[in-house]
Image 1 (cartoon, helix red, strand yellow):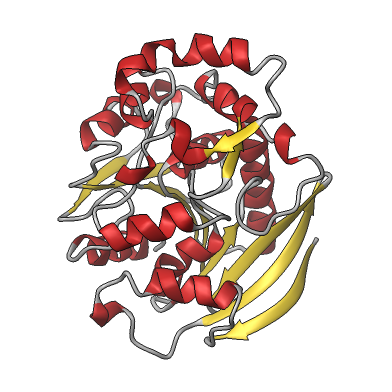
Image 2 (cartoon, rainbow, N blue to C red; image 1 turned 90 degrees about the vertical axis):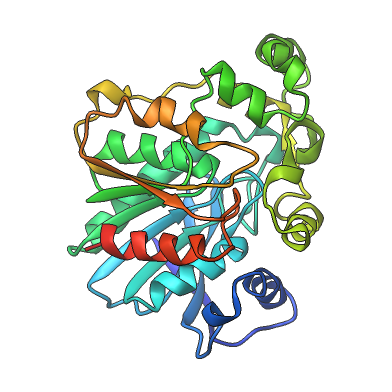
Amino acid sequence: MIVPMRVVAGGLRHHAGAVHEAYLRRLPADLRSVPLPRRASTWWRHGDTDVHVERIGDPSARRRAVLLHGAGGHAAAMWPFAALAARRGIHVVVPDLPGYGRTRVPGPGAVRYPDWVALACDLLRAEREAHDGPLLLVGASLGGMVAYDAGTRTGAADALLVTCLPDPRDPLMRRHLTRFPRLSGAARPALRVLAGPLADVAVPVRWLTNMRAIGNDPELVDLVVRDERGGGGRVPLGFLRSFLDSAPAVEPEDATAPRVVLAHPACDRWTPTAMSLRFFDRIAAPKELVLLEGAGHFPVEAPGVHQLVDAIDRACA
């Protein structure tokens, strides 16, 4: 059950609202016009976790999208993209995945990557049950692989749109994702050792990942790495180990549905397009590649961000 907590109708408040506004200011000026769409803050009980879920736009809209953030993200950071999609007539559902944002977990050190996938699957099924119109699943950054796994496991989405497909089994992905590329080959065995007795120990995200490459806008990067509910937060060593040891339930050669759109930032310094293509090219389902011109990993630059919103609009037809 999803229970409304409060509604912030286009306005901004000191706490969460100020964070939303800070991320919104990184968009090009022509995309920051008012009025802003309706934004409702809600809670959803998933097992023993109170999941914070933002709902943006008209809940009775014919089209709906579930938007999943990645490492260093949360619902407030995704607000600019959700708002732009909502202005196209799409109701957007954005959860704070465990360990990020305002979601409350009883044991933060026990969060693992499969928890993200399980939550995404169950939320997607719930949205499918509640909505009989077009349903799009969107995944940003690491959320792209979560979206792929949830979409192919459940079959509940009509289409997937992802900005990145980081297959943790790929040595190229590990080299780009880690803060120390030369040590990437040792990351998995080292974490298996460390994340035994130290699995629940949380360390700053920036210690282990190349977080400074999350964007090409220096002010945006500073915002992300200072954000204690996002890129400035901590992640359990066991979460990193569980991600690096993970594999999708459906291999790309066996993924015949749903349709997949890879809307990849063309100037991504963290996860280059070639890295995602190694997985994307193997997908058997109908697919489309869209390169977001001039955009970094966190795509706020023009014209790439305009192309991203257009791609979401088309994919959620």
